[in-house]
Length: 355
Image (cartoon, rainbow, N blue to C red; front, top):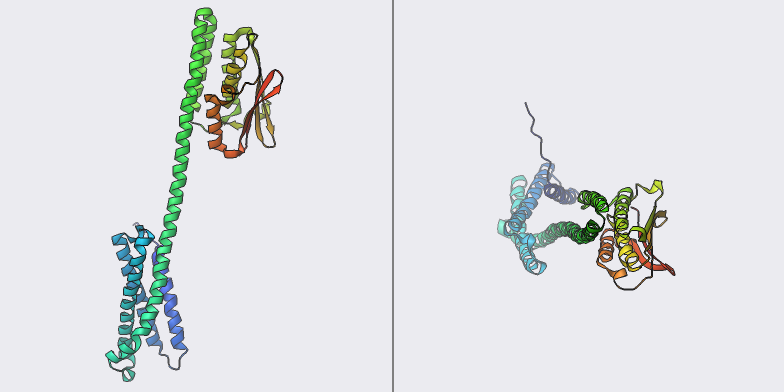
């Protein structure tokens, strides 16, 4: 035999029961403080006070849900709130007057005047009391819904922001990868005519790079060891084309291999160094890659033989994409610059914050 699990009361009904019970207890305490107090009459008053309050306010809530008032802007909602408070106050006051008269007719009929006289004597006081209670309830109800709507909107905006950043990162990656592979294919095309054996090695390297790219394309970060392997394959591929005109060295302490860095960040800097440095020099030059762990984050330095020339060397598509990806992932915490470190050495420095 399976037991059905009881559903807990919703927050709305918890607030209704607790709120009106507290109000009814307060009125019972005031009656108890008087000269004469009948417990049975007090319990009856308490029960009907709670039922009257819940009944009137729940009627309002039903109308709000049915007509979608909780979706309205404030300028459209405010007139409805004011009119509703007046109507609810009149309804609540009438119900309470009838309730009081009937209960007293049952418990102490000898002290009761005619209903019309009783009604006229209490209607204004109960209408004012009802206006105060209904105003508090209606405003609290709409403030709660407003707060919930703002929370939902903030959550939705945050999700949309993440989606937009993911889409932008994907767009940047889509721009970066073809740029890299087009250069590699041009290298292989050149080597096919001049050195078939080297061209075959180039194809092996490029296939490895392509496989590597397909598996890491969507990742925001990747282990430094994989990024270094990618950069090493790229530099070897370029060295096959430049032959003795290109020398390169990569220095990475073994303990830093597990650090996480953005994909293609080192390869982009190495490509920029070759395109705007080594390729421009008849005698070629040297590319050095060094990765160290600094207090401010992971420091990647890629230097090349050459002279810094403002323009594409500092504002090319690859570097522009790199800057945008860093801004999307790390904001202002990441740092990137290209400078003339020595008379014949250009250095690109990238600092990636940890965590």
